[in-house]
Length: 160
Image 1 (cartoon, rainbow, N blue to C red):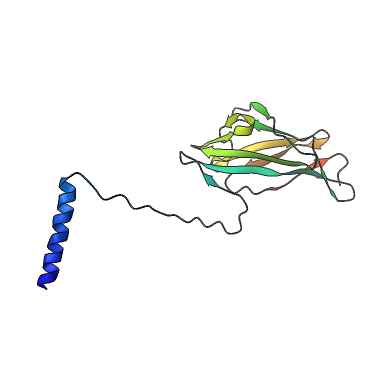
Image 2 (cartoon, rainbow, N blue to C red):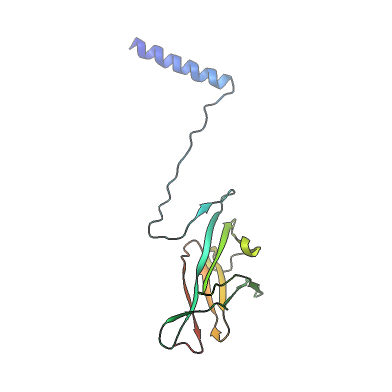
């Protein structure tokens, strides 16, 4: 018992000496695990609390036979809440594929490869874009943290 009391007193004295000297013990690192089971999107922390995410997929149409046909001439645009449209120079590959890295920070969507920063224009702070192509009906897509690469299927004149 006496040994415990002496040891406890030594610890109190040591902690008191650290406090008087202005030194504090270093903060303990905190590790956080984020479970994303079933999600193929990749989130990477940014320096100021934002995250990186990829807006990716393929723009296709359905042929009269029912096959998916790529639309490499597809175009993307953004329509702000004020109704003003902004064309986005997002490249669409010959196979219809598209991909743009997006930094989401402070409620803004920055498409660095396109050198543009967009405000959310959809519910729950998401970004709504319009995909269009000659001879096809435009389609709205909504991008947010839940986005996964997918086919964006447009209805075109020669479609089924």
